[in-house]
Image (cartoon, rainbow, N blue to C red; front, side, top):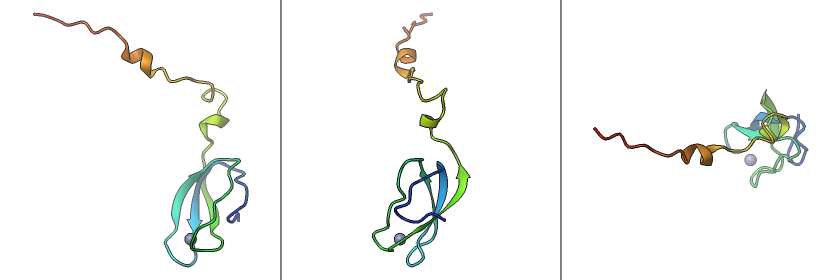
Length: 81
Ligand SMILES: [Zn+2]
């Protein structure tokens, strides 16, 4: 089970276990990050709940660009009756 400071090896949703002071919280972490340390407990533990690759790991999505600005630029035609 990874603890604070370990590298994230699998992107996904992790349950963060703070033994001392708060309830477990699900959080998303991306591969290549380090699991952060908590300012209140020395070492939290991280339990993978669901693997979920980030978009940077998806060959189709990572190079995709947002097309929103183009779709918004469509000319509006006013319909006068
Ligand atoms: Zn904590």
